[in-house]
Image 1 (tube, rainbow, N blue to C red):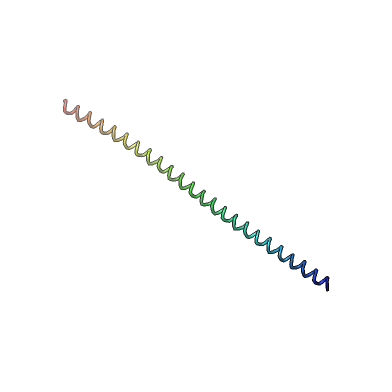
Image 2: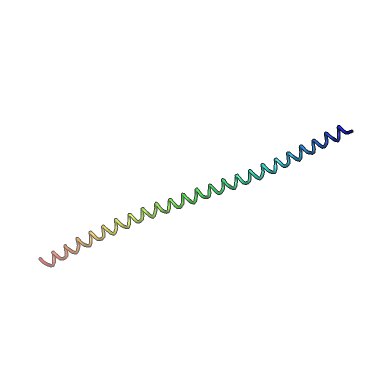
Length: 87
């Protein structure tokens, strides 16, 4: 009778240990998934910031080229008009 009770108690302890281990593993898995989700969101945010900065640089370059071209065209037109009026 004592052996049966002893065996039952060991089995109960084994199941309890298994449940505790399972709970710990579940907790660690949830934490790992949350960290992965957070890292992915951070990478996505960083890519978006880089893309916006790159687009801003391109737009600024295009604006600078357009302004320079406009200044050159206006100066040439003014000198042409001035030479036309002086002649």
